[in-house]
Image 1 (tube, rainbow, N blue to C red):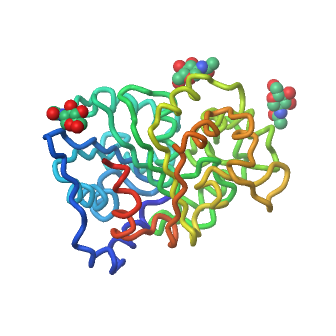
Image 2: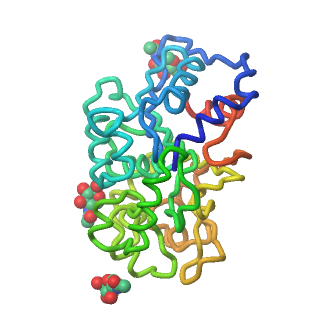
Image 3: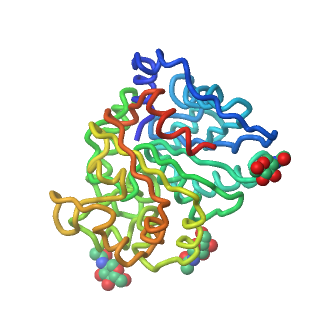
Length: 307
Ligand SMILES: *[C@@H]1O[C@H](CO)[C@@H](O)[C@H](O)[C@H]1NC(C)=O
Ligand SMILES: *[C@@H]1O[C@H](CO)[C@@H](O)[C@H](O)[C@H]1NC(C)=O
Ligand SMILES: *[C@@H]1O[C@H](CO)[C@@H](O)[C@H](O)[C@H]1NC(C)=O
């Protein structure tokens, strides 16, 4: 959910800083590298020099000549950060779609990399906006089945998070809270499944909980790969299974199920089973807390998908 931890790690991780030698991928006959689009997490912004800024720089160093766009939702960095809490997600997604469509550098397609909530937002972009084409979708600690809990908050936004918890308790599926609180839009209450399916403005829609939208299914399957990274020591995302598209079993809040065990997969409402069979779903793990990884890990596991 937050990009804050990423940067702690990026700054603090000695491995990251020590790894200097890395394979430089050559684009032998002069074809330009595929551009990358980033979408930050909760409490972060497009251009924070110690989070998305650092990631952008790292990608540019590893793939010379690459174009990296870090999405800004709003007119400036402050708005961008606030919108990550308060701007209707469907509106954010359509804003992102028009930015991508209007950018001439992305015409030939792009790879997308979403951090925390930015990952499920970019999946919505893939499902709703097939042009320009997204090639690979890299989900870094995304919550594809939502969250049922907000155990920890980005350091700088404790007060915002307390206010959010209060609002969630007041009635997460009320129209008012749904319309005004981003985290409510991917709140998934397994004890009130009907209510979630009926009222969730964002997640229940992109996860085909109501009617199946065949366009979503078709568009998602256009991806070359859908890579999901789970953080094995994650203390932010609850339940962490959501990072691999798993969740709590309906009707209780203890036992979890994997994507493959879910109705979504068994009925293949979103095309994920088909993608799995085609080898397009990639499940990766990083042995750290939320959004924590080293440069070495990034190069070994994720960089190959950016070529
Ligand atoms: C570069 O090589 C690829 C595959 O070998 C080929 O499809 C492509 O057309 C080439 N591009 C240029 C600009 O020569
Ligand atoms: C399905 O999704 C597409 C793309 O977002 C949208 O244009 C269309 O209205 C949706 N169809 C239904 C029935 O919701
Ligand atoms: C959900 O919607 C269905 C169909 O409109 C309705 O029958 C049901 O009572 C609703 N459930 C809740 C909990 O809102």
